[in-house]
Figure 1 (tube, rainbow, N blue to C red):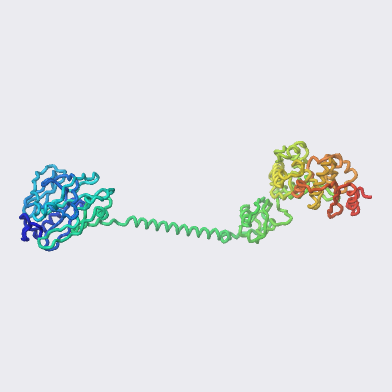
Figure 2: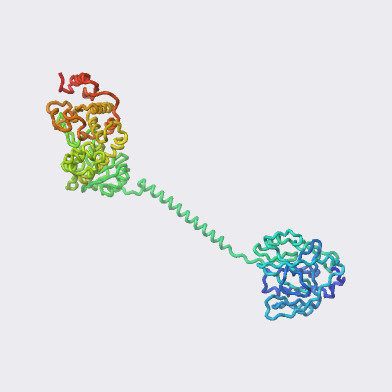
Length: 632
């Protein structure tokens, strides 16, 4: 029972008729119709009371205003001090709430009167009727009333809550503080703590739970919407919005399936490709075609790079139509090593025949392969035994001359001599450290003697001109000499070209490599003494017949290469210089030797500091019948 109300349940205080079950049901239906078309976020309903209990539905409370006034809320409702209950405002029977310019019809109440809820937008303003002020309860002391507080202007980023009126109570709601505002003042705390709602049918008041703080309300409500409402015990939950189909999850699943499918396809392609190329490398898919005519059909020149595998050989030969298939050639080779180079072969021959031609020890089918041993000269030489030693020019001619289907290719010795004698040092590839000496002997092909290093020249192209052939060999030889230390490791005291000339004498005089540094020291000592070298090798360079036992007219030959006649080094090297001879001349052995002589056919060499000692060593050579000149 509320304070100041009669015990008669049929009436309420102030003469207001009691709320019957029929009227309660009618009111809920009216409220449902009135809620249609309104913002669901602005409406908050409470659950229906239990059967037989009065309808004590709470509404949002407005800020403190003068009795009988309506319209926009000028400020927030001051907070009720702790321990003091909020005083509900009762509308006496027959009272009306002032209306705003815009009205919304409300279903008629039980007494036949029509209530209106106002909004600021109205085309026809209604005449407000001042409601009768609610009388304070007789048993409630005056000091329990909330003191007026200074109104606080509403936030600009949030509309002020509209007043929702009913015939029972008007409950005003205060907006929640801004997110950056700390509620430290106890006056700003929630006005609602424990609210007792009097019930006519019960002697004991029913205690509602304390209202949540604004922070809790914001946590329960939408974080992005701060309208200041607080849930009550009888609040009705809003209907849940229909769930959208999980389209994004389905799209992600489709994307994952697509990625997995692409990965599977890629892996299958990778494994298949690796397997295919592996089997192809093993020759599983190769053709085994092979020819049967060993004579073949025509000549063909095939150039096979160095360090080629048997499969590389097979592919090149298949492209040249020499063999029928790579597999047939690999099977016929059976793992035998084959050197790369230029070969003259026949087309459409059996793979076994091709392997025999490529591995022939006599190199009959090799083209352009020139072997230059150390000590070899440009011109061919005939020895005392009548044996002819082909010179470098002759070997180039033999290697490049080839008959291809009745057409001759290659260069001749005469062409090579002409190119060596009259071409410019630049055209011949002469290095800068030998250019001056070569230019001084223009017209003599021997001016490039010693500039071709001893090596096996695998590819001297038959189609190249003599000048091009000589240029390639001289330029590559200069690189070899420099790599052996001719420019940066020269301790001989001679210029690079002079060192090469002296090294060529060492090359022709020495039969054992360990004697080379001593012979180099003899040359160096004689040059320092301005003594004639008197080397048999230099005299034999221009002789028609070479002979280790120099005698007769050989001593008297008037040539610049005859060191028995002229002092100092000859004008050019006298042979091709190998690396041991060059290194020996770059760093001669220490000693005072001035003479040396070979005493037997095995190449034993004796060295002497004096001429008397040298004569005794020479007698040993005479005893061994190696020499006869000067013997007693």
